[in-house]
Image 1: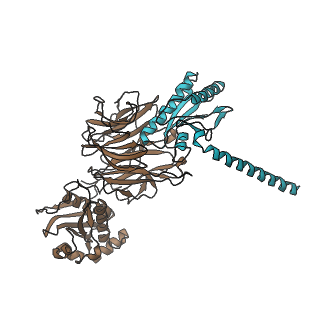
Image 2: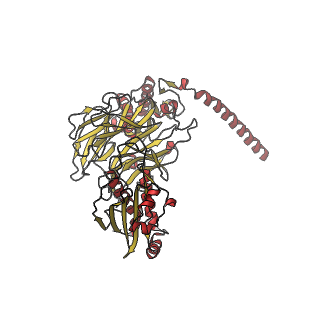
Image 3: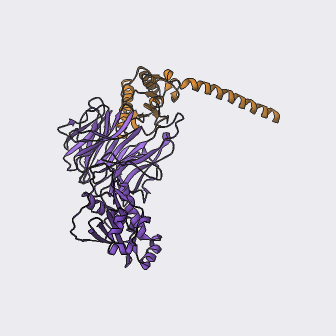
Length: 163
Length: 446
């Protein structure tokens, strides 16, 4: 029994190693900016979390912009469908900017980005009562890097469950 | 703490002398004036008295060190090495032997005396013109012993004023945001310190994000942005009592606050539906007024010292630029037209210039321009820096600078820096933690 357990653990460790090395290779590919940005909008999935199956929690923006890309609109339509299916869930839209701007302007820009997402959710039938907007400006980056890819991940509006 | 002027007595002993030495502060500090700061003399009884209360072996030397340090960091003066001094402090204060001071190339000499009288600190000091062999100024103060650092700052201000013809900026404080922890989860606290970095004190605990503190003209109140309960709102903090209150009843984020020059209003931005406009709130009657009304982002407002105009940041042209308008929101004029983006305009206390942050081709600059936008001058360039704040005499700007992280996202730091309006004398101001968003107080004594 005991031996068996040790054997099992070893197997688990081995499996973990395999997964890790697979991750490492994947990561190397992932740091290729070409595959992860279109223009300067982030198109990767590294930082994306999911509100439900097939419902990404965030959309990304170009530098100084608050225009929703085609991909962002698709994400927000999925969020709207999910919110319609779950009428008791309210959300906070957290707007963010990258570090390459002055603090106060970035607070306003984060608010504008989150509102762009809010407006889109509203056109898909979600009541404004269910949506709160909160801007963090550049105060809460997900990627602490000082490079164009990191900045693209940080220019975002994230939909967070409020209840 | 050192609220109203605790200096109990300030006797100006009037003197007439032909000032031969003059320091021109409008030029670069390429030739700082050599001067000697003699340690303030102290008798043995006073020395022991202060040692007991203040735990400083020789308070006379400590005060003169503060003066020396202030004058050196101004960049306008070159305090000479004390080891070269030939005359003892007590004798120098009575009658300097000018040949001796001339010999070590001092053009000015500061001497003085400290006494322990009735549990009080009594300080007298004199400023001498070495070449003319004349006394230029003599002053005496009496105060509580704990105020000894401020005495050093006040002496520095008097010397600066006598030699440059403009008010000093040493008896002042800086409020700023202390930063710690990883960039993605930065913990920020309000902190306050003397202009030279001494007496650092934290005003908040770091439980919520705080940003952009600014003093009122009396330097007793601070307005700042706090994310208390995850609701970013402008707050008012009384530094003496610690009481805080939210400013106005806005259904959304208020930010970018500053006081009006008379301290009676707070001007700030309110963001709603993707638009940010500028509002004021009267602190007495709580009346809120909307100053700008535009679908763009209007933020970072700052009053002219006479209160008649407001400079602010707007992207109504498509990108961040600097504008000036009348205080009722009329007569809006764009003033920045150079290449790049412009932000954080802040009106000089002298009224003639606006300091700003500029972003151009991936570099950040601190610069100044006249209030009509002419005469743009960039003082310093770096990877990232912003948020200039003026010294009360309008001669020095304090701002903060961040470093780039490496490919692993390491190596980030944020520090406070100051630079002369001339573009010379750039210096880091040491803080116990990383620091950002500095705001300079008015002169505490006048």
